[in-house]
Image (cartoon, rainbow over all chains, first blue to last red):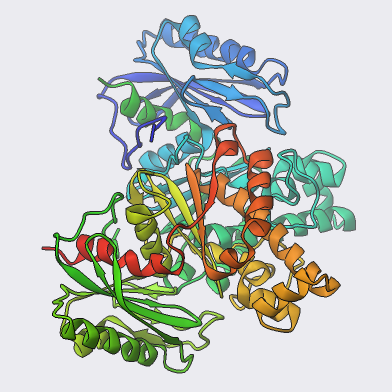
Length: 315
Length: 315
């Protein structure tokens, strides 16, 4: 059985003291870049919107600004760690541009163009995996060998750490939990299924159901507008039920929830999810699993670039 | 982080040539016992119905018959490998009798009574994990380091092998995929959620929805009775959608489906599931994942007792 990637271990190895890495986080809506040091400290931060027609162009433009600033400051990064939304083909360092979030069907090379633009070694990983490394190294999952990291943002994704190893699966795709169907009578998801967690509870799904962007739907719900309230109630119920299913599937000791939509809702999202786990997870031990917000927020996917580079770019 | 159990590796270690193990498979409906040798060959097979009020009593009665027959034949088994429906508390060797399938709330000791009755060392594991070891050692998953084993029987459960290791999770509960909610508007499941895969597609769920046992519902559907057809259509749609979600969650290289309900339906169940994976799994590699029937049938949970004993009872 060929394996696309070797497992990443938790706690991850550290970069040598004093060394730095260029980190990039390519999401469906935004690109972020920064210089990250061995302690996870972030500097020279830039961000831009992701151009759906040219996501790697957005990535390179943003990365160039961080690289220039780092060079001016005298930093000599050991490489580039790129976190990107899935699905990725890690065997060729590319994004499969087939998701609902960046429509298209072709394979978009990432590793090659970034290496050419920077002259540095490049490592690519799924954004959720990198964020999980960040939370494991510097955030809410420090010292925990079995945890589930979820992001609820424009999309929904996850990464799973089991027995101190990041679950890769056979092709580096494990943890794509946004496309778990939780409502057979639900709306169509871009993946082809109906009622996926993502189409019900992610920012993109909330926006589609609410007829305006997710932030506006949330504000309308807070003001008591019935249609918006219903959209968010459905989103939270779907998330709570799915979270029980994911606890049953992976049996983590901890669930860490990041992403802008999760952060915006706070305990309105996490409260019902915690209660559902406490009541309905399968097996006594599973019912006591804590569900906590990510400690690093949007920085997790950048900070995790340091341990990712330490694991994959070190000789 | 305390770990309840050490990981089981695939391919599993073998028992020494010539040695045997007493194997038991405690299910919601039936108990099976047999003597298994190092090559997975099964002898002295007995079976009985599971008494819901005293499942361990059923287990011991059946095991005693196999043990007596083995002794008469001159076998000296090295220990007892017990596969049992979950949820289990492996730290104390007990069944948490809280599931919908064996109602009750107490913890029922298994390891202790079996050791007392046989005078042999005992290892307990979830039935799906043992069946996965059986399929890995002697069946459909030989040579595969990343696979998902599912059983569709009275209940639905699973076991996951990732990178040559059985996924245990933090408490030995990983892979309890029967309690993944796939229909938020579906029927109530005994676990407290609504529309779990198990309540829609397992034998118990088919029987509850069809008003007669699952075999009779299947026969009625084959005869074209509309209500029975609808029950099975819903079951197969739920299974197909859930299977896509599980492929997305675990990223296996192979899915092996066992259990009496799956065997009874054959390609009526697996065909739509294969097609759904081929069309909707997330990421190109995931869409080519084969979905095959278990090779060992009901024997997987017995045959897997040999590698389980080899892994856990050897010094």
